[in-house]
Image 1 (spheres, rainbow, N blue to C red):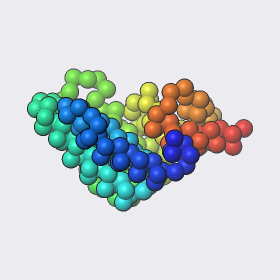
Image 2 (cartoon, rainbow, N blue to C red):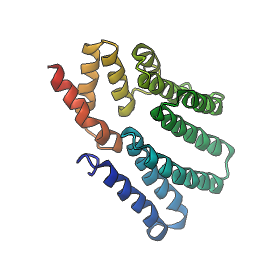
Image 3 (spheres, helix red, strand yellow):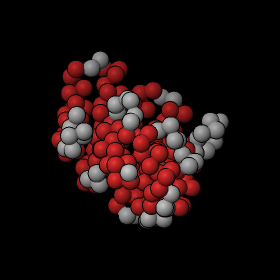
Length: 206
């Protein structure tokens, strides 16, 4: 609700409070999962709004929780996937700081952790990470190329492909994707982050 209202700082504070409350109000086996979900949402909000100090702080808390959960599960594949997810977040943070060298290095670390998987979609997150780097560099055509290879069933990825397309001068396809994003029927943190801007871009183009 706070994200929809344009109050990301409040949203981050609310979610970190929820994470702390999980220790008292959630069954012991579910604590890390509940904390992780709230903290990951807070990281996403902070990253999207370039609130980089908050993003770094909350990401540190999320990493501690995620690794504790992986340790409790005690499965090598789960631990590897956890680390891959953390590298992806670290790449996003570096990209939004403008540290593209570190962002690409973290993206490649993520890739190395997942490329042995049998899942044919294993590199979609890697492409979204490189796409973000190219987008932040305003290399729109390159960003489009990578985002097209990312998970376009993900609303947030689809939004960023539309931004890259708009920057690359592909206005018609960008407007179509912005319309799809703006009319999404399921609420989520990602939808709250991009809905208003997507709708605004559709209106401005008409």
